Each structure stands twice: as structure tokens, then as C-alpha cells.
Amino acid sequence: MNFGLFVFSYQSFIEKLSYFPLRTDMLGMMISKSIQSIKRNVATWLREGISPQRLALSLALGFAIGCIPVLGVTTAICVVVALGLRLNFPVIQAANWAAAPLQIVLIVPFVRLGGRLFTFGSGRVVEIGSLLHSSPLALISHVGSMVGQALLAWLLISIPVVALMTAMLTTLLRLVPSIAQAESGD
Image (cartoon, rainbow, N blue to C red; front, top):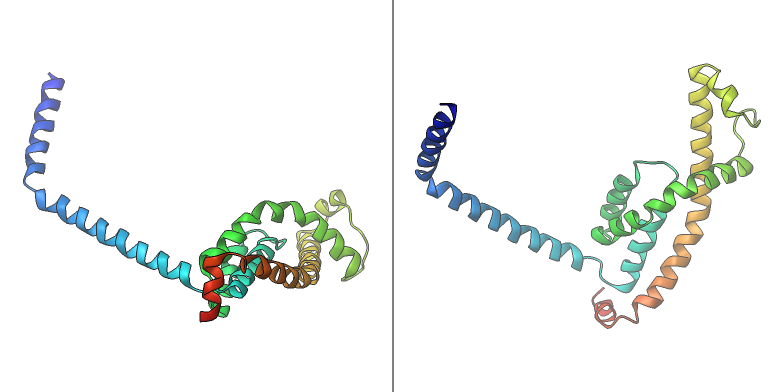
């Protein structure tokens, strides 16, 4: 008995659906227009900053920003840098995402290097066990100090790395014929 009711409901639903053929056509047209618009925008984004120097700078900055020892901020920083310096947005993001595994691996070395180079506060090494038994304010203060030291170490390392990567990538990208032709337009 319930099966008959289900079949009847299904048939009436299909009949009602057949009255609206224009809706599916309109939806298809809207999707098609959206896809065409996305293709145009992507093509425009890929042509931005195509000279070897700007492309190399986009790659180098994206890679360096992708290695920042603070999780969750790299994409936003890349957006700001790409818009501020008018760099190639897809390229800087691709380099950022390619560096994501290195970001996690380099957190501890940046914290250690920052701790050796810069000392804030007492300058003494605190063990994690004793830190967990201290007050929440002391924990936040110590972790904030470690993050600051790691960021300063990253900044100290990233400036020469970006300069070196930009110079090397510019030389390599000039060997690509389609990119070398765009150099005269920049």
C-alpha cells in the first residue's frame, strides 16, 4: 500500500516538473555564462605580470611567504602582496601552496634560530612541562615571544633568499621563449 502511494507521489512530482522546462534551460544558460566569465577572468589573471622579472618575483615571494612560521596567514599575506605590488596572483598563490609542506617543517628551526638570535624577557629556556603548569598568561606570553622570535628569524632569512631566488628565476625564465617575448612589453 505504501509503495503505491510512493509511485503516485513520484508520478505527480514528475508531471509537475515537466511544466517548468524553461527553468532548466535558464539555469544551463546562467551556468554557461558564468563559466565563460570565469575563463575570461582567469586568462586575464594569467597574463598579468608576465615579464620574467615580475614572474620570478611572484614565485620567490610566494615561496618565501609560504614558509612563514605562523600557520593560517600565508594566503591572506600573498593576496595583499600581490595586489600591492601588482604581481601575478595565481603564480604567487601556487608558489605559496607549493611551500606549504616546508612551512610546517621549518617552524621548529625558525623558533630555535630566533631563540638564539633574539632574546626577549628573561632569555631563559622554559621546558614545556613547566610551562603547562604555569598560568595561562605566562603560557600566552612565552608562546607569543617564541612566535615573534621565529618571525624575526624568518624575516632575516627570507630577504636574501627572495633576492637570490628572483635573480636565479629571472635568468631561467628568460630562456622560455613565450615569457621572454613579454619582457619587451613590461
